[in-house]
Image (cartoon, rainbow, N blue to C red; front, side, top):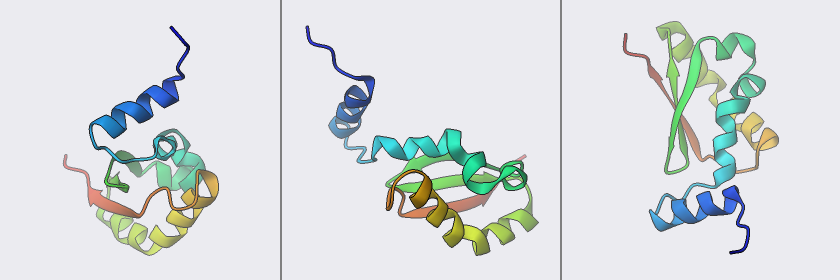
Length: 97
């Protein structure tokens, strides 16, 4: 049986279940602090990717408002850090306590 990389296996599974997300997009979860900076990362958490949209949980209404202004810059940083066009949008929402 030939060796198949884990990346290739995951891509096949995602494709089989019609989850058309580039596997590289998931790097955003462990690179989030590098992308947005420590202060912002302390108030946010990327939660899921659905249809190339990253959903980000925010812990404070003021941060939620501020992040809407920062969205274009964050997407640009994701493009530079991971891959251009890897995510088509970011959706921020307030964490339920």
